[in-house]
Image 1: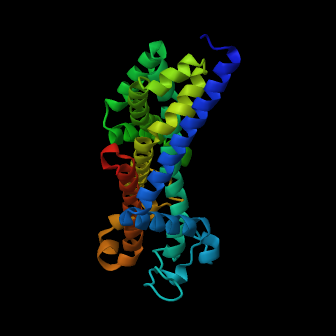
Image 2: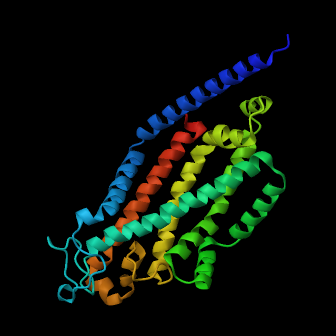
Image 3: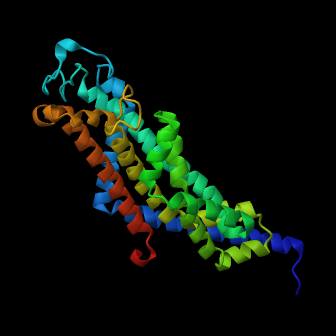
Length: 304
């Protein structure tokens, strides 16, 4: 018996409701599995503490991170200056807090923006294919054919040192990996039965790609975002340590670590570089713990 248009609409509503319930159950299972991973929870706690400390830096430390006080030069850690002072009398603890704002913004912001661009192109190109997919794939291959650090150094040398330039360069060099990952996931998911059912109902391409297929591909994508965040933070720190990243007048974790180039400071004034080095290590380690937790909770082979 041929179904009427009203019956088809009811079938469509019933199918969408069942699909949304399955997605909701999967999400609850993933959250539960993530919370049972002790290292992932520890990483999330450390990440949150450092992030909140940088956001509320003015409430935690009363010192201006760029204010010079020559009477307080190179003082060791004390109750007055928790991490001591640097060669110009600036409070190191304040500089670590305020520098974290910039470093985390560069790392996390670049990872999220590159993921947004990669997802927007990769989801559509992987689902639809055609000339858009071919062009995007070739462009991503051009960017990924160079070692990223070499490409970043080249672009920084051309455009000059600037926070905005570094942010844009990280996005330009980072979207290719996210594009290829999301494209591969879409190529796999578009053969699933629920996607073919959505196509038969006449659902729009945009809705199928970004509303129904994308949630099923978010597991490896979230892991990729955490890895990209850690990589961008380390890259910024490395570039700033070499004097090629953010201008030295802006406090960042890499710029604070830049003083360790002086052998005298490296040997005699450990508080000027050790706390920020430890902060970078702990923060990046916490991000990696979160990524490991997301990977384990979204890996189908680990599902119980």
